Length: 247
Image (cartoon, rainbow, N blue to C red; front, top):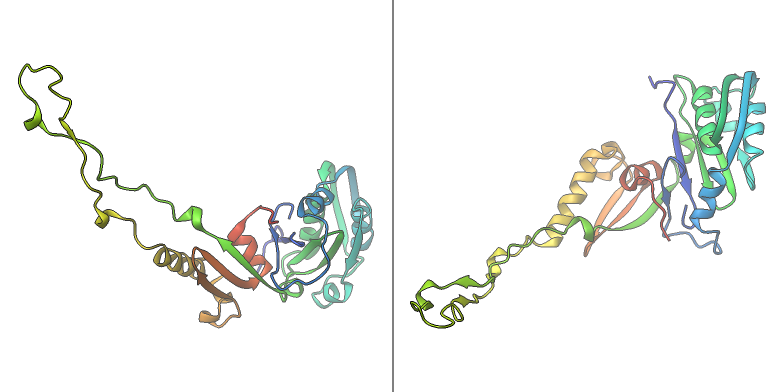
């Protein structure tokens, strides 16, 4: 049973979370959309004050989304199928909070113990539904993991002191004492491809394991050079990338 505080906040654009991540689907072919930072600015709009006292969910969402300068779509049929009625009472008081945070709290309150609600912002459109509904959309994204492969290299070609070249008492005795040595190729770091493959396996084992095809799900990871090509639902991309924007 899910706790009352559970809710997934998903933000997707071309690319496109406040309190979640911005992801991009490589399969999108729509015309160019506003940059993700524009979407985040909409979600980060400040709401001066909210005072809900047994306010119906529909009315509460209407108040909050009035601050969203764009299109708002609420899939009431999906919410109804999950047992969430538009007249479910909401009670809370908030001051000087972001639109995304207020929406997070209201959907968490509305979902209760048995339903996980979610929203997704794409360009200037805010979509509110259930996590199950929004989770049906699969996203393909390429992650460059080169920065995770960097390791300290063992330098074996630093000059070394050759004491046999030091003459006693002579002028400039130490001039030829430092002798360079050739680099030892055997000290090179492990192949990047192997490390990328290990990272892919780590993700499969730790990030929603049941979502991957190896465990009966639909998600896939492919290794390409120093990148991971991941095809999975938005919540998985959020767990992998955290809060970020992608151009």
